[in-house]
Amino acid sequence: MKLSKKILLITSLSISLLGLILIYAASLNVHPQKISITDITSDMEGRKIITTGYIVEKRDNPDGICSLQSLMGKRKFKFRYFQI
Image 1 (spheres, helix red, strand yellow):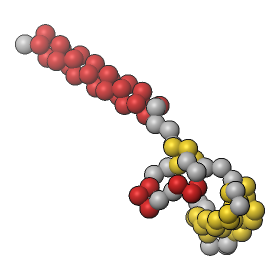
Image 2 (spheres, one colour):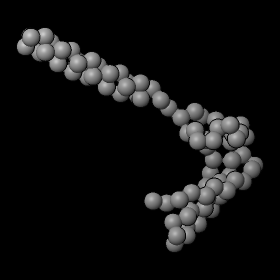
Image 3 (cartoon, one colour):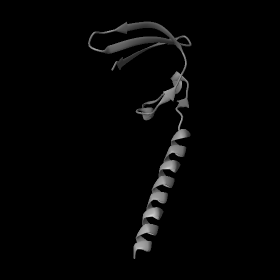
Image 4 (tube, one colour):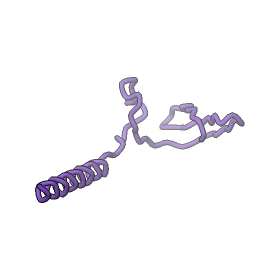
């Protein structure tokens, strides 16, 4: 009886460790998608993306709200985000 409990414990720990290693390996392969600003749609809400552009203006608010104006191609975009 003691031998089967020991084998069950070792098997359970091994499978748990293997699961954690597989989750870690899968998380290394997750990268944000590089996309043009003109291709962004409302379907992408909540997803991480990478885009390029130039920051034209930055404004800070004492309440922690920041505002960026970015130039991407010939278009200007305004972004607001919360500073933590």
